[in-house]
Length: 195
Ligand code: GAR
Image (cartoon, rainbow, N blue to C red; front, side, top):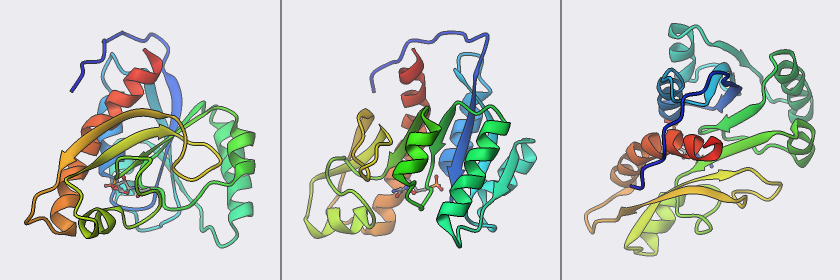
């Protein structure tokens, strides 16, 4: 993997992470944010799932978190935007957030939003990426960190890493192997954006 130059930041970017579940990428971003060469400071966790495991990690790390029920996505987005403003958030990282942000939200936030996706974009946008890779007998899969644009999983790519697909792979094995790489490249991609 290409090395990204380290720089020490005196003023870190106030950031938020959005998750829907497990939160391994959230954890890896929080660990990274604590390093002195990290450009970000994670101030807020947003989730649409009350039971998201990542909440436990946020609590342990004194990171403010807020759950939005998304029964009405427009209303939830309006509330989220207010909260982001109140907390002076300037950067959003989506990490397994399974709701699609509206065009209006993306425009209104008008700052940087990035996402991690478990495939080699532009291949396999959307859901069930690992099943698609296995069904098509692809030799490689991987993961991608990209900017969020109004079209799903289509924004500019920041960093991408290939992972070999083995003949004996099943969905779970492949997913686990790719997730480990995701946890590594997400912080590297953030470093790259601000270097
Ligand atoms: C990750 O594999 C991430 O790429 C994927 O959800 C998982 C979350 O894992 N995101 C998407 O599929 C978004 N389209 P985590 O909660 O352990 O970070």
